[in-house]
Amino acid sequence: MDRAFLERLPKTDLHVHLDGCVRLSTLIDLARESGVVLPSYTEQGLRETVFKDNYQSLDDYLKGFAYTGQVMRTREQIERISYEVAVDNQREGVRYIEVRFAPQLHANEEMDIIDCIRAVDDGLKRAAEEFNTGPRVKEMGEPPFHYGIIACAMRYFTPAFSDWYRKFCSMHSYTNQERVFALASLELESAVAIARWEEGLPVVGIDLAGSEAGWPAINHLEAFRRAQRHFLKKTVHAGEAYGPESIYQAITELYADRIGHGLTLLDPGSVQSSYIRDPQKYVDSLTGYIADRRITVEVCLTSNQQTNPSFRNLEDHPFGKMMQRKLSVTICTDNRTVSNTTVTDELHKAVTTFGLSSYELRNIIVYGFKRSFFPGRYDEKRRYVRRCMEYFEKIEKEFSAEDGDR
Image (tube, rainbow, N blue to C red; front, top):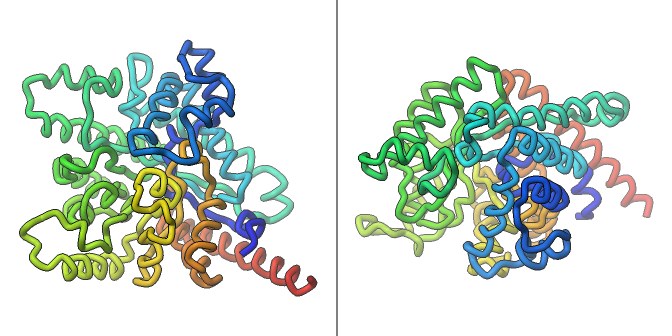
């Protein structure tokens, strides 16, 4: 499929980290403004030293976040970055995004958790209003741009992670470490529920991110149960750096509506628990359970290639097997800047590497819209999805006609 065709299609990105999407030009500007030391003050230099096309390891991949996090310390900085993320997505045909970030990494004396969420919303809302009142929507009939915000709890943290975490750990210095992690997640969920239901902010759900091995999702059970009671949607990073048991725990204990990455889902060799006597049967049953309930897997091809040597050859990525099993999957970027990618790039990789048919591509895109945590009412979501897919069909016909004319 032509890359220009993929770029014109209405698309979604349901797994995109705000701090992994800072424009390099903005990082340089804000670093100079804030006195943050960078290894280079040119975009080319940063691409050569930090934000590379290929990384040696996960630790190498994560180095960039140390720099982006330092320029997300004020509401103005976060609002600017959020605005630019929305604009960058709009330019390549992405019509719905769910930006995720960990507010507790940015909260400080001047800005609490809800302030952080407000700042993200302010930036995204400004970009949405500009686009939706512009000629592409008003005159050309393109679908409008919408968004949601997802707040990430951390499986694990130390006082060094941020000012907020330092103070929180200090206040719970006599508490068991895993309990401290659980309490931090509960605090985040409480803030998210207030932001959503009392302040009307479009924070649509919570996520669990961070080191997977050794830090099980069940530590955060209380927070996700409370999120369930507050009608918040749930997505969990799982099966990225641990076996399929992690995915099982995410969907059965944390009520996950979607799974981030899910790389080990179909791999019996990744089963870690000795009590599982038949790993193949276990992964087959787990896959069937997920497929039957349409629990969507957020697939991030490029970042998986960059952080996991097993997928340097993209044909080895489990995405192909997920498609064969008819799972609900959506293609995402994870980190636009850190992975130097776009949604169009990711779809192009998926189409060319795995030979997707037009029907399969359409399913992937419609899953992105249908399985989104859209902040409006369900009937509003249905109308929006229909409008986006009608536009998909329009672009499809245009390119078919052009092919016929050649």
